[in-house]
Length: 534
Picture (cartoon, rainbow, N blue to C red):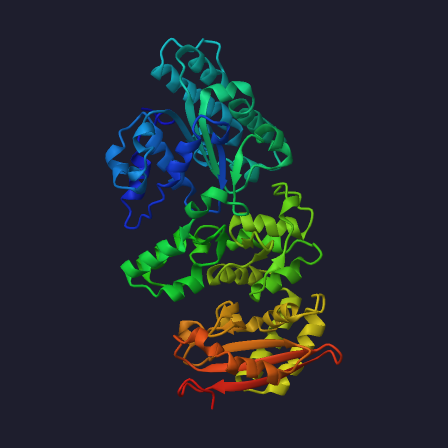
């Protein structure tokens, strides 16, 4: 048993000993299924506090010959899998954390030599007289052990991309690190001594400098999670279970921390959910892990359309993004799509793979963006917020004429660039127009299922404002009439969609006339009296 070669299971035991542990061990069934194949080169990237290190420690505890983890895993889900016994603690595992290695190595310049020397020393202790004295590279050492003893290794690298991100301007360090990874994993020889390679970090691999070095890795990312989707963050089912145990309001938790779409799963940030379960305080826990200081220089880059996209997403809308052009170069961003894609990898934005659109996933992250923007005044945003506040006030006063006029003004001055030709684009304009509502309301729900249809926009006030602010149920029409919109709300019983909401509700019908290029609005108060509108 060593620090890097065949470590013990104490790191994973610490996770199991925490007050809250959510069982993700079924991931091991997947890794068992690819062991020893070309599919066993895995890179799983995910944001901070999404369980990267816990997963790496779990895999180490399960596979490492340096410990006996039978009791630890037998009560977890993997313990019921048919592959459990076949691979439990059967492998030589090499596990190192690049981030941790920086300090004992004496700085990033010495990381590769530090790791190489330490692991070779442990290999010599584990397999005396096997390595020739002239061996100076880790890849050569592993090849020699395999040639002499037939041993195959599992290599697990945590925070693999630290040098890619933090030493992006240091060409010497980058090239040395890339060559180190190439030697370990690329080519025919590594397939002989590598049983599985697992790397985890924030960034995916595909970058111009590393593409040829590591293009044999299968990637599982926030953009394309594939089989890893249920193991990145907490799933909705897992959060419901925790809410029952800790007596938290699931609907409130969903508003605050839901929003990441990973395949068929809705994912939650584990750090935020765990803190909420512990302390019961609905707030942003994100700033404790990745400060908005990292967001500020990104969203203030001078790219066409970037500020408009940020404002739209702050309002609750989603924006189109081309994620295919991003080369993981954290220094030379080419356009707004690069910035938005990077923010998706950092976890500050969610991504809808089907629609290819980015969005601010939840209330927690929206507050982080607001905190960042408070540090850098945007004149466009300041003026829009003032006009939006007037619009919200007119809405709450049920002044339909003023609402229509203010929407006209905001559309003309701030969001005229949107393709304004159907109800969907009208919905985007409305979400931007009601930007100021986000102080009092959660992100608007679009096309929320109702009694016999879908409401276009539903704004629900946050718990602390429900006594003073009504829910807003908005129906949109294109080249029809605001009256038609309200009629549809009545006939299809749209308030049924929020029947559990006990506060006041305003019904809002908005129409845009293509000929006059004007909006019309009608507003009614929903009376909860025999389920009818008085």
